[in-house]
Amino acid sequence: MEHKGQTMDAFIEDVASLVGSVDDEHKITELVAARLSSLLDSGYRLPPEVTRPSDEHHVTYPLYIAPDDSWSLASVVWNVGQRTPVHGHETWGVVGIYAGGERELRYVKPAASGSSGALTPAGEHVWERGQVTVCCTTDDDVHAVVAVGDEPTVGIHVYGGNIGTMSRRLYDPATGAVRWFVSGWDTPAGG
Image 1: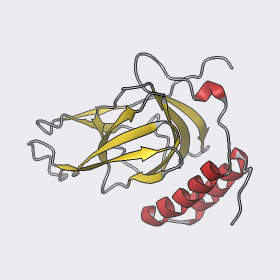
Image 2 (image 1 turned 120 degrees about the horizontal axis):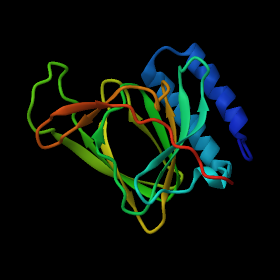
Image 3 (image 1 turned 90 degrees about the horizontal axis):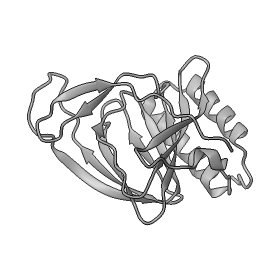
């Protein structure tokens, strides 16, 4: 199916339809990943103001938030060498690399019983421009991300909820200790 020149509006409409009609998060992530891959392959260009990094920390710019908070779309930008803490999402998510590259460090999600101890590494992968990954489902969502390369990393992220307002877990990988946080949204600087 050819999607050259696909618009963000068409992508949003398509994802909204999927979220409203598919209940299984594994199926939703598979379908959203295919659509995000098509969007990236189409030559779509993000507005420059949502691709600008911050010198202090990675930033999350909202591109679309469903009126019922059932899903959200974001541009997440890391400056060269920036990294996230080890965290979870508490929902499903799909990420497409728009620019740069990222190293994802995955961990086995601890049991809900809250047993303590160091997190178990579950591998790592470097994602590059144009590649799409299912970053998380509710049963598998603990990772950290590091920007790699010599340019800022920009990812287009789709989540099953308003990721900027959700309570999520931060993990200490050495002890397994959990702290809850809400990431919030960043505001793009003027165009």
